[in-house]
Image (cartoon, rainbow, N blue to C red; front, side, top):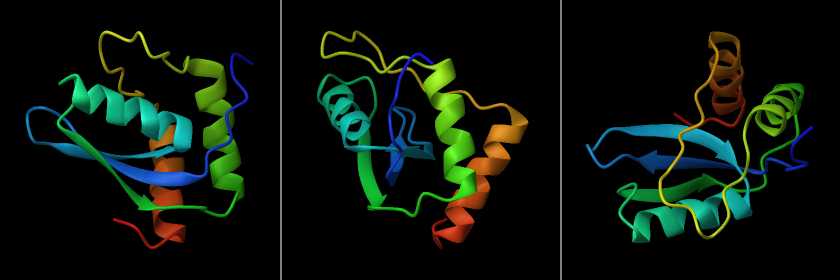
Length: 102
């Protein structure tokens, strides 16, 4: 695995074009998103729910994120939206549903 991030929150990320998407992340990724917003790579980020339960759906998505993506460091020069396979989008949808978000 590339990373060992534990996903603990749900956030809404607003792109510069005004469209938004939900992402499952953690405080580190939220901090990176805040930095991306300050630098103009995205419009804004807001936390919708903290301390989500570590369900089987979260565990599956967490494994995908850790294997597929690298957490940007503070020198990032763009925002990388985590592209999801249809299966992983369904996992995110189930996480949102089980946490009554969206």
